[in-house]
Figure (spheres, rainbow, N blue to C red):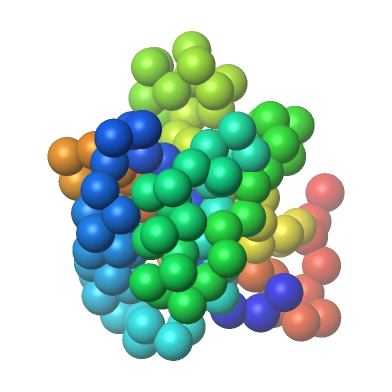
Length: 135
């Protein structure tokens, strides 16, 4: 995969515009152009929800849902630790774990989790071509 991955977490009643604004804010804070965004990722059980689909459509993307095992495998790279999310999702930050898992092996956080009133967003970048993940 190439391009930046935005991992998001959100409450069920979150307005799509809030998710879009947060993703755009994250890109701005990371110094990235909007067209750098390649994927909008979240937990598989939330990926089919209307707010995410509408936000993804506004960003010109299709949401990607990640299974709990993929999120858990990415948790070692998560820098934010929320006790509430750990209890409900088994990871420190859903947004960070989703971004890292979707970006693939060797991915790195470009921007740790930021939050709005009802959503979170983190950005990850895939490993550079030819760079292997160290054991």
